[in-house]
Image 1: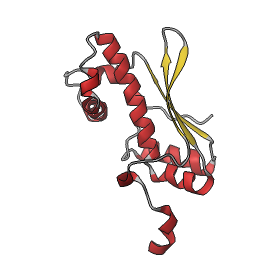
Image 2: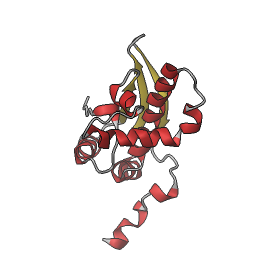
Image 3: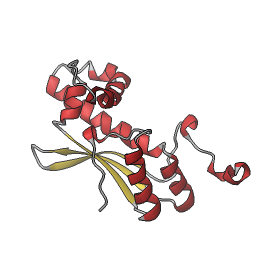
Length: 157
């Protein structure tokens, strides 16, 4: 098991630490599965739902605020604040799975060796159960704007 951990399990395309860990896991260790695992009660997600100025961490939590904006119609129909918080934890995990699939690292591995499979899970600390929220098989369809043309890679080298 090879683990990378950060606040609110974010996959940020400018985070060289995360990208280095991903590249090592996928290209060197040739892992078969990559898991994004969030958890209910996540402090990062909770703070992203608020408006309190927390200093530098505001920059990081902004990514979760963007996820909230993407799902705002759904989230704002949930009147129970705990249920809304839980749902933001879930949709954040699903978005991070998508972000992983959009990396050239994952796409190249899918192209070259049909691995890894990407999973999105949330851990419920109240019950001890894991809930699967997302699964992306190698070669999963992505929006074309995020898809790299790896078949024609040699033409531009």
